[in-house]
Figure 1: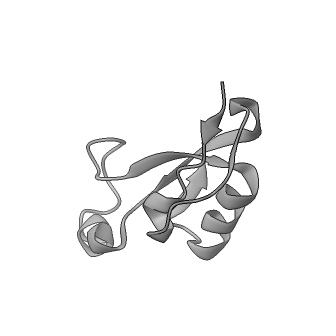
Figure 2: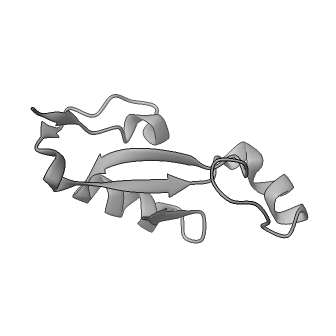
Length: 76
């Protein structure tokens, strides 16, 4: 069964990629609108209570998110 890339949650546009789940990874990122409060709290809390979002993405999309959001996104 194919999996659809969920990077659109971050980009705002639906990704066209579908493929085997084995070619995907999970990306955790902090939405921009929560970053100031997250910094004020000293970066405390853990997913999902800290407001972070997790999406399953194709590896190239995941790398692009992490590269564009240094310190705010990571592949888990």
